[in-house]
Length: 225
Image 1 (cartoon, one colour):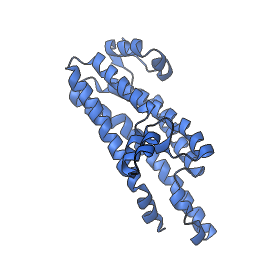
Image 2 (cartoon, rainbow, N blue to C red; image 1 turned 120 degrees about the horizontal axis):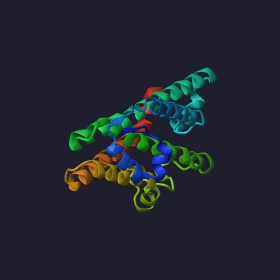
Image 3 (tube, one colour; image 1 turned 180 degrees about the horizontal axis):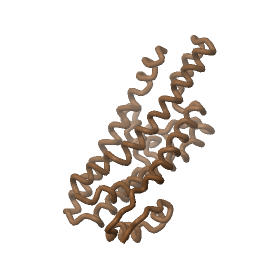
């Protein structure tokens, strides 16, 4: 049995497609889907950069820069976001797949299929966040889709707000999806699967919070603001 991924169909019939992936003897490497999602990610992040999303530290220095200097810095900011988008895609696809392979010994190509779905959902989450920042001025960590907005009412500690801001309804769906996928394709103790998935995502959320916490300082130093 040969399996070729269709992300949309998989999202609407998760159990059926996970069963077919588990039974498949041959998995076609989804290069076209990978390249398409990589292109979508690059367009999305460059578009967000052109809208000025995430560039508030850069904008604050506009008053001390000439027009040409400011435009050049905006260009570098957009290029930086494009590079980040590519790194983001590569990380989401290959790093979790490798870690889960070490733990479960599930065929690596099958794990890549799982992470393609994860990447697709993450990109949808970012698309849905854009109206919140454009029309309501809400940063990603206080999006109504995340727990950061609740944390902001309970604490003034920036790191905790960023941490809970990384945990959204989409992130919880991803955790549940990964647990279901790995549990159905692996015979190892389910407690190992739960522990691995939760600890990995917790580590990613924490790393994201740390990066967000230092992001303004990094941008300021880069652009000498």
